[in-house]
Image 1 (cartoon, rainbow, N blue to C red):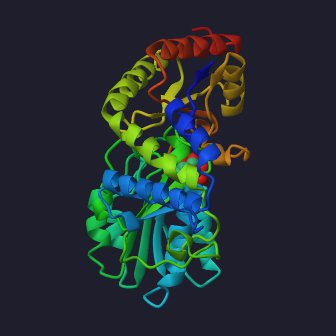
Image 2: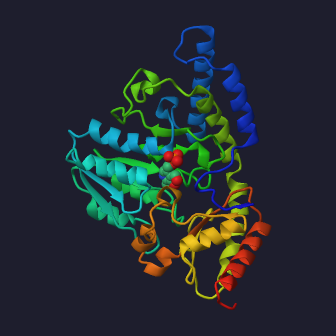
Image 3: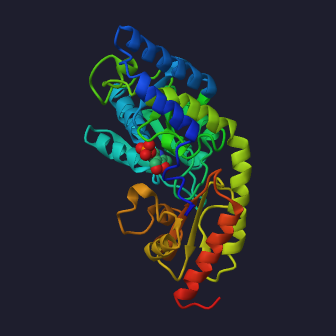
Length: 376
Ligand code: PLP
């Protein structure tokens, strides 16, 4: 099997799984319990938080463990807006955010917040000028993803940050799910940032929100004192403890992984264009981990299924919107044709993929095109 769907989720690292299994068996104490077993869980949990903070160059109290990136995004956006509504009601985001951001914004409209969706350009990014032109005195939050999950375009978050922080009441949240441990994330200049473990060879059900100490949030899950009162419910100590190892290993491999994946990406970019009527939808300077292409004669669903039959896993649109049959709204927002938007597939690579797999993928595409009646 060839797995080119790493932006949807990744396999768990054996080292992470080993530690997790041991923790599940031995470290089952509730970190809030006062006895020895509870104290042990608490100690390891806080050590993990401190290690993660060090890796991200922030303070331990700025790491909030959550259950998934969707939760982190919801907490960052809804939690921040509700805690800061006395400052203003205007929020900026982009028109191609992950559903957890887009739906959180939609939810906030019910509470009187004014949400403005900034348009991406043809390269799939929000330009700093666009942010500047829409910033207002009462803008309290800007939430923009670092890397787009469908096409891999990279937003200029360092430039955008300067504009956001030119307004002293405005906070900047960045969804770093598709960028973290692939390219550098400047956590030190962000107010809030989201990371998910299962996208970086960690566990499903494990994620975090980096939130600077000065940022006030209202908890979405009401309950106890856990996570500074920002997330009620007994901590998932084993998952939170192995997140430190997951992050450390991912960061250690960032540079080598990037080079490796770039070769695979470049090979497919070059070879796929030899098939007539093929489009590369990802911009040239996209992150190499994501490659979005369209074969004009085969619709997304047909191509995905034909590749699946040949043992190749890819996505059509992002996985979270894979059950809606309409065209890719990201490609339409980039001004791509309707055809590209209904005929696209997303390939997403990682360190475990090989150049040989890239070649097999091209061969499979050629066979599929032939089967569908077009001579190469
Ligand atoms: N943000 C982006 C950009 C994503 O690609 C995803 C998942 O695909 C998420 C958020 C949600 O991640 P999770 O599955 O951890 O909720």
